[in-house]
Image (cartoon, rainbow, N blue to C red):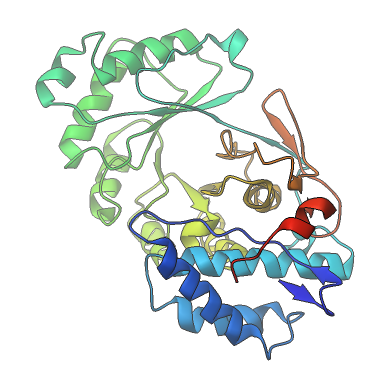
Length: 339
């Protein structure tokens, strides 16, 4: 996204959602770009409102496309104003963001001294109830138990269930079994039920002594209001691409923080553009929960300079204007835009 004949430009990244084909996403992106042609891009709200009228028609690909334009607009305007994106979002509470480390189900997990972070995300894969009851070492719950014990009580462990449980009773049985051998004050359960089952999540919040965390259920400010009204979560993960950009994410944060509900940042994108946007967003949150970016901060160094320093599980948010991400000149010369 450029202004003044390309002398100043903003970067955004389009994530291809599951179930959406590339042709549809590119068509929607081109149509959105055409709508922005007559609009002064220095007016972020007007530009995003124009794009929203089109992207709202596609519930699957629309938010991801809108998020890409939203991030590019914030990057562009940050550069024009000479300030980082987190200043445009209201100012940062911190300049260093802890990053959680993700482990697939069954993966080897080191102990806390070797893990290099204070927070991990452990994948849980659905298994038959008879396996859950047995808690054998080869079962998903057996792997979780061994991994949590190995990490110790100082590492926060969020169990990513990804809607694995058909009903609250199954989720409750699984977690009660996990807690039966020892009290575990450092675990949380992420999205155990279908994203639309807020009543079920509310029941789990009331029944289980660990935090219930939602991410897939958090797709709009309206959905966040329902989560708060039903007390369906103790904490939420706001994914920029899922909700449609930084402006929408900040609306969700306002609702969650007003209800004293914890918020953390995440992104689906896998280049420095998406990672930087999520980091700037994380910097303005009141809470200090780690961001879910462990596998997303790697970027193609031939194309982008990220401007982000990462060490010992912590990312330092840059102070350069905009996102702080720059395209390399040689890559720009060879780059053929899709739009």
